[in-house]
Length: 403
Image: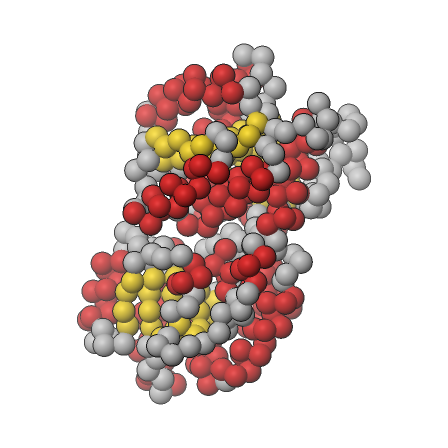
């Protein structure tokens, strides 16, 4: 094999929603445009009409298409049945790469890849956590169970891909120092996503966009609103955009606080449209890995108040001092007040910030770095030495021989 031969690649993920599926869709599309044969396997029970339209639009652009099967979020006996069924379906594709994303997708990809290898097929098994099980607390029974499974599955992993240095460090702390190849590859954006979104008539003062679940922090923003009024004398309008298991509870809390006249909820919509709903984005997450929403907002030159979690400080770099602590409505309110009362300065800085990230977070770079990893594994350049350092390998180069 040489590095010009197109590869046969299947991505496996449970949930076809949010940033994880955005990453896969962008990566698979770029790979198909480069001439590779690519497909996606994902859950058939997750997502609504918005996600169904996205999948319907994406599938014809991938040579292997998109195939959906029921996948339980928790560990289930149905996992084994699905794995065996997928082995039969994938055996005839003569795959080069099985790339798993998230805990469940990563488990399926690595187990299926191992079974195919036992049958004589040379397929490399890649795993990207995307946060996933790494968000669990290592001191809980559930966390200990997941991390034990992650340690077992690493033996069936040819390479790990981390979307942030933070994610790599959490894997090292909670699972184990990697005993296989690993590389950090940042998420990337399309060139057109760096076009600025300017303020316009009819926007709310603040906006939240994303999954309606406590992990993303909508409840913290809601509790910060009375603090903004009492402490800072500010009563901004707010639009929440998204769907999820906790939305009904959030709507009820807004009503109970008497905020329904200036806080509204809206169904999911394309990100650029969501980002045009307010002048200032609030990202009150309790945990993240490398959030696309933050990248997209920075690229669109939108002023932002975000929490200091996960890989967000890696995006903000020398601006990270302005990030606020998570799960703290008072701190979030203070951060929002600072931007609202100095909005012109915040918008001028957002212009510079967007230009600063252009070279670091592009789809072209993300795709080429991952493609290089695939070929490095399929065509070893020299005898492989396991990298046991605690730092991820540099982008675009597989660590070997201690270099």
